Image (cartoon, rainbow, N blue to C red):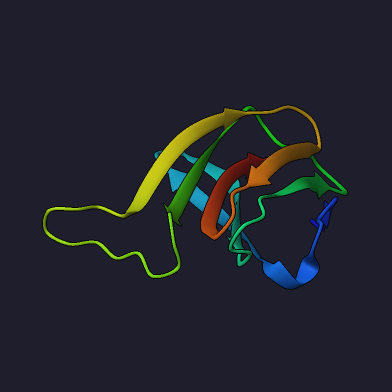
Length: 113
C-alpha cells in the first residue's frame, strides 16, 4: 500500500511518518495505518490530503493531537499549556483531507481495507 500527501504548502515545515500495522482485536485482525505528522511552522496551518493509491479507507478513524500556544509552552502542576486532544473522524474512499494546525504533532489512526 502506497500513500501520497498532496496540497502541502511547505514541505520543509511538514514532517510525515507512515506505518501500517496489523491490529488484533478478539478474533479479528484489522489493518491500521498510523500517520504521524509534525507541522513545524510556528504560524501556518497546513492543509493536506492523505490519498491511498490502492485500497480504501474504512469508516471511522481517530486523530490525536499535541498542541501549544507557543514554542516555549510547558505544563506545570496547575497549568496544562501543552494539551493532548482526541477526536473521531469519518471518511469514505481513498482520500482524507485534514488541516494540520500550526506548531503541532498529529497522529491519525486509520483502518484500511
